Image (cartoon, rainbow, N blue to C red; front, side, top):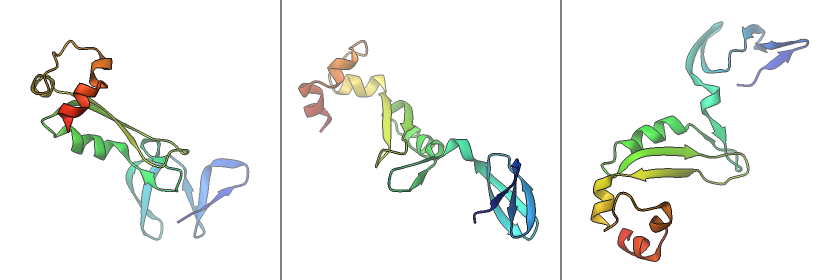
Length: 117
């Protein structure tokens, strides 16, 4: 539900005749005059097709994998999909025949991509 900014008061917004303070949070209007804070707005981004993405839940879900040590989800307004940067576990690198000290270029080699399939 969109509200209108009050003239000269960028930190306030008017929704259905009720004045709310703009905090940067994502909220849910649960009753007239009552808002429940759901999430932080700055933790979301919008893709080119208009879809909003919250990267933190995705990062949490993918970090549960036994194959990923670290993960970073990124996207922006001119992209049509999100990007995940994954640091594989040393066990996975060993399984693929790559020593854990290999450079990043080894991970993009033809041998690596064949083994990953």
